[in-house]
Image 1 (cartoon, helix red, strand yellow):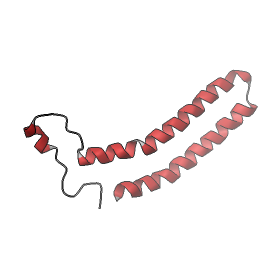
Image 2 (spheres, one colour):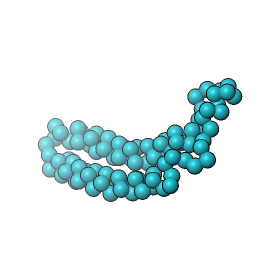
Image 3 (cartoon, one colour):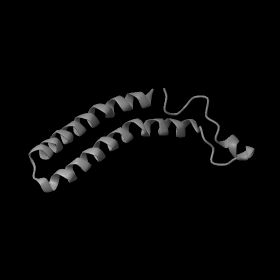
Image 4 (cartoon, one colour):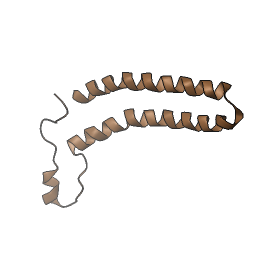
Amino acid sequence: MIVNRSLLEVLQRSLTTQLNAIFIMVCILLFGGATIKQFIAIMLIGLISGTYSSLFNAVPLVVSWNWASFAPCSDDASRDRYKPSPRPLLMT
């Protein structure tokens, strides 16, 4: 599957980048001044939640868009246009 292969390739790069940024932010949090500690703590929360959402929320969304698992209209004529193809585009 292309989605699985792409996720595995992105996962290594993302985790390397995020762990590097987290290491720097933890060092600033521990050794930095009192005025910057709250800012860095909030940045750490944002960094962790952003990493999670970009990796584990975006992939199911792309797959569901590809399979057209939700139709924007409720009438039968427009629903027939959004039926999933027998062979999905993102899978090989």
